[in-house]
Image (cartoon, rainbow, N blue to C red; front, side, top):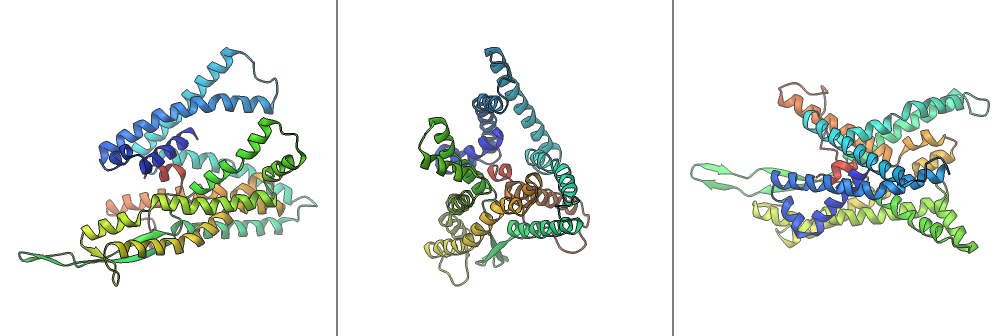
Length: 370
């Protein structure tokens, strides 16, 4: 998690700070320098978060942890060293394997909880009050449909046709071909959910630390903190929609896309190059972002809906939220890289019919490393 936080910070700096923007344009050397900065920032973030993590563990089990300076310092060092080891392991997987190593480690951490949660749900449904095997099979069908729908969300694109002008140099003709700009329906992945989940609990923490005794304020805090409550999910969905638009506006620059297209002799059929093209791309992006934001908000609150429907809390986490989006995104990304490798080696690919279209960059790490 500290590595993901550091990656997000570096990515945001690359959008706002000219120094980092310059590094992004320097190719491989700039990427290596940004990765090095991410590593140093990961160590700093871990050192800051480790005492808070220990304090939280001490609140869950008061008196279980020794209250000595040596314990706090040594435990902080151990947490920093463990984070550095996992970060190194992930980078080695990236260098010597297929896919993003950190993303694969995160995916394995999420999917390792699935067998236990599935067994617990199965045993719970076999009881007299559980509904029986039919209800369990119905849950599996609903989960499968949700996974298929999330895959459609992750892979959904709106293709804008781009025509390139013909150039005749000597006896050869250059250009004249037609390509497409794929604009993803969900171009920001799980970032809006991560930001929304972090921000929605800030008022709760502030009220808790301030020890406010007002009944009305305490009631608002309790309503926001209730994971399955109406107000918590309403505010969470609202924040996700806002952050989806905000993050899309930061990540996708229609003016830069129109300018690059114009420099390369490309144009959208029926649209004037330059400003008109930028306005057209911005309008298309705004139209496809709204359904993507609404569906992303719905996916984020699906675990709460599943829990209210009687699914146990551990298994309900796989019905949506960041867990399901990360799983789908990482699996699609890894399959796409495997297929690209097989095709490069002159194999037929993973499937006889169809191809895994696009590169699914919906895990937090791969989003932050673009």
